[in-house]
Image (tube, rainbow, N blue to C red; front, side):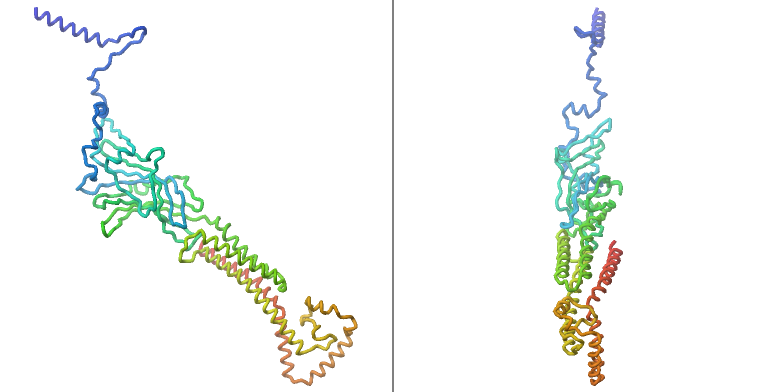
Length: 465
């Protein structure tokens, strides 16, 4: 009897168990309703989900002291770095700095952040976890200002792998110093560097290195600047020593910029060259046109001064001479010399007229005209002489035969003078012939000034280009 009771109970339990596993139809529908899985089927799920459902933290942040670096007391922890340059925003010659936006990524291993996972998938966090764990204290050497972007949230990403490897990425805009040499400006090339270094950890605690060598630096192909051509980016690394704290690993992002010359050709070189050429126009103007030549010379000198002031206003006040200064100041000298050239011409003309006046008074001509009415030795009449002759009538002018008789009488009287007087008169006439045509200086200037300026340009562009 007891065996029969046990057998009946066993069969009843077996029927109930089989009945519970059969699909059931929902009321009012023809769909089958599958039974819910029992708690035994949960063992096939990922262990991370089990822990999450149980409410236990996956990363045991509270169980460790993250104020200490990983493997504290042991060898230096290697921290790999790679950078992707998003944009090169501006280059300032006045402040001698540049502004760059980049993605800065760090790679290291911290076993305190390891977690079990059957799928070996990483977990990604935002900037809130960064404040609770240890991260490298990398800063930018010689930076003037920098900030991490925070729109719409902080642009910080933290990715943790099950074995404890960590990827820490952030988007930063930094303005850093760049020592520029303007001795060849604007035909110059500048090399700038962005330097990264650990602030607190020496090379005995933290080894900072480029993760993939030169491949660790990536740039956007669309990066361009208005005044510069970006020639190349490259990476270097070295040790930096501080007398108070020791040696530190320092990483360098180097890039070379070559300045576009076309803007300065239009704004500086062409106007300066045109002003020099404009100053040469005075060599073709009559030397008696004093207002025209003086006003042209003054205008070109003032224009050159304005060009020089405008160029230096946009440049730092360096203590050495720039290439553009050489060109502008040489051009200014050419313009100024053209003004001095007319001053010399005007002075020599005045001296010549004074000597001619004295010579006419000393050796009066008895050829039918009064001494004050004689013509210039070269046979041409000046405007004042033509006006003075206008008052004479034909009765005052002798005929050709009468003039020859007068000349014969005059020569006969002059034969009684000494031979030394004849030599002095001949020498004085030759000297007047040389200086009387002072416009000959203008003729020489028409050739000397352009030839000298062209020669200067050939030397200038061959040296600085």
